[in-house]
Image 1 (cartoon, rainbow, N blue to C red):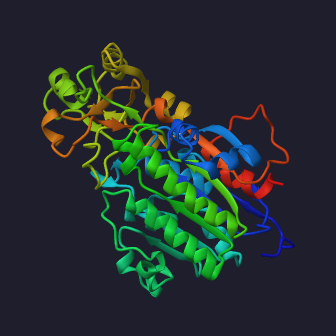
Image 2: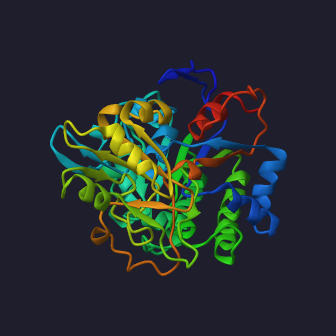
Image 3: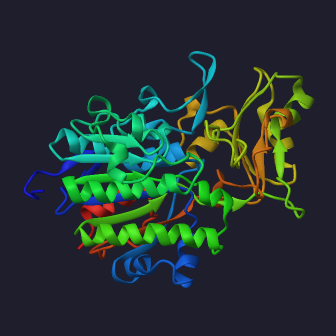
Length: 411
């Protein structure tokens, strides 16, 4: 890629052109301690090299610390107040319906990926779960965009590639498996070797992190796999940038049972059945490993309901970290007010929020519940395989600074 092209201005940020292929990886659910523990166990020698010879930071992700808001923040370089994707799931007031936020119609900003493709760069996007594919691929011109989940369905017309399954050299994995993330890396390395795209974005799944805590054999084996592929990428002469959408914490009580506050049940008791509406933005089609339970919720209250009084009542409940009205919560967490309820509720580190007890099927949990969504899971790694030449150390780093640093601040 020639570096003589004029920089691009994307969502208010100036982006220089790549001087070599750039691979940006979003490791779903990557609490920084996963990397630390894997390195200490000797399972991640290349990640150790990145920390020692490249650049390593801690950064804040977006709250709610869920997949869709953070991935879209990363690829737009903006918070949800700008790009509009504030959860995996939301209540659309315009149509009076609860919907998944998987459709590009909800996206309010262009992506860095799309803009570079439109300017002539060869761009590839590989995501583990198909729920992100349309959002990440929106606006791509002549690019490649497919998911590991539905790789066998990829076509040249829809995905820019006709043999995605063969590209990875692996059988199609289960959506509930570590192999779904490995498929992303295998396909990415082989695509880089064969076609050498200028810009590649890869997003994994947090199946392992929902089951295995940092430092456990399962977690270390997973990061050892990632480490091997990162080294393969490095051997291809690329710039590597790695971050995460959110961390992960145990959400259990002293007995190891799910530690849940069922907010819809609480509001039904206070206000009457179904008078209020609790929305859990963690909700997506893949609920087996978390039961749609996370540490962030928003509540829509009946008109004329004293929101401050209801919020104060919720705030007094054990396990609640914060209750904010819409305006205060949206300012604090940089969220779009028209897509949030009257109250924004965040639970403590080891507590999750539910709607009604009867609506959550936890029968699929075969290990103690681990989940995310709150401020306790917002800290994520920010790693590069090249040194940073200049950065303001007083600056609050965000996971959505990854493209800015990779394009503008590396040696």
